Length: 215
Image (cartoon, rainbow, N blue to C red; front, side, top):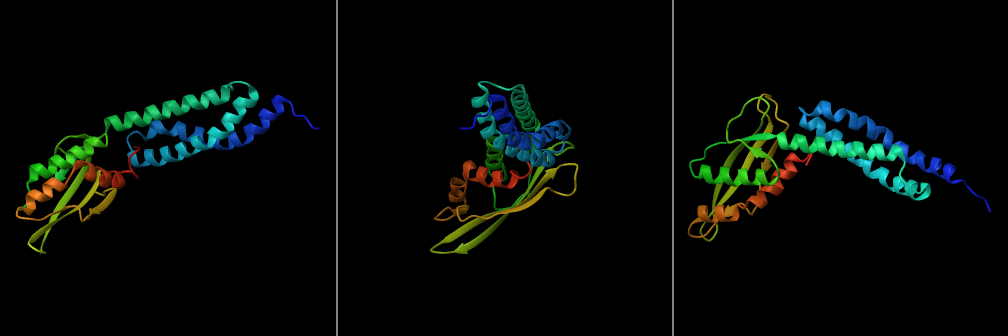
């Protein structure tokens, strides 16, 4: 029978822990400097979160063997809590202007309201159409297609881009196409607005924003 001291066992378990903790600490130290660059912050945050998740199994084993917390692990958990606070601070300070192009067949206020509600549901602060430096912009160009299938059917599609108001190049260019964004019956346009729920739009907008914002 071979025996291993508690101290030696902890030292062995610290090897895989530190392999994840080393890049985690470097990434955590960078977050504050990226508060004004949401895409870079988001990339760093995702890597940080992955390393933190990988640190948990060896950390649990270390606590079990050591019979308590190690200062090193406690300090890393404090870094994680601070990083989460930094992420929340960035999200709380994000503002977005919705620049919706007019379309003669669409109710501009109704569509803007649906989009604004969807963005608010994602935790973003909507500031109308006031686009100025430091604020994000969401440009949306609605398109309407009419077909005749047992009556007139209207299909809505949304082209768009988003980024900072004071930057010409957008972060992302997108197109939202879905069979659910349609209206039919005696009043196709009214039917379209009834189907166009904010929750439906939130899912699409989340997938568009998620690579660039730290949700």
